[in-house]
Length: 310
View 1: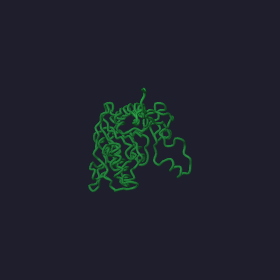
View 2 (view 1 turned 90 degrees about the vertical axis):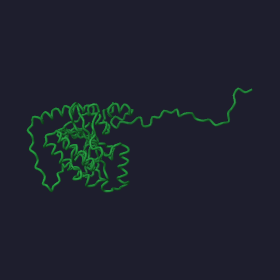
View 3 (view 1 turned 30 degrees about the vertical axis):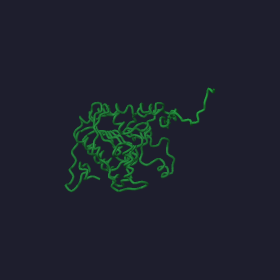
View 4 (view 1 turned 135 degrees about the vertical axis):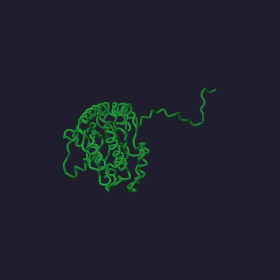
């Protein structure tokens, strides 16, 4: 009698015993160390070893700045209708649909109202994950409405930029947003309401050339790429080698383009102190004279009717 007997049926594998680590780690481009993504998330997307600032989505930025992470989103129903029916490698409408599914947003900016250290404030946060944070008609309209609301309520405005510039799929319509927002900011300045611009990685193109550099206070995160054209384009144009760290926030601060560089985890306290100082100054300053009204046949750039704006 045999103690062992071979079974003729094939062997079946049990549940996979391998521990899957794909997607749980990433390499920091600053110190070249491998970081666990959970540690990075718990540190506000900042490398715990070299303090390199990774990109942060718009909702996380708003939750970080508003008291208790509580805010009321404004104009969230606005969405692009593909005015040019643009098609390149794929239709623009298809790109919009994919971006909306991946980010949960209708376009590349969130405008919200809430309080920062008990002080009412309006914050616009751009979402780089939505077609590179590019500025089209909806982004321009939402930021313009936020500027007008800040002026009407005399509430400070903060705009956090993260963008590759104007959205080429909307052609001249996207470029017109630069002038529209700049005109609204001029009215905000006349009203004596503070505007703080926060530039993050990256802030380039038409966003840099317009509202991102028009703040009463222009501040940036460490190591942020800030410029108009890219370094490669500039080198090919001027036929010269650019300096090290060209277009990084530290280079711009050294050359007078920025007022300060503030680490992400210190940003909320810094903004609170800045607003306290600026609103104290505004309260003691004389009121600015009102602008002349537009002629009846002209449409003011700051009109509250979106049908009258590009």
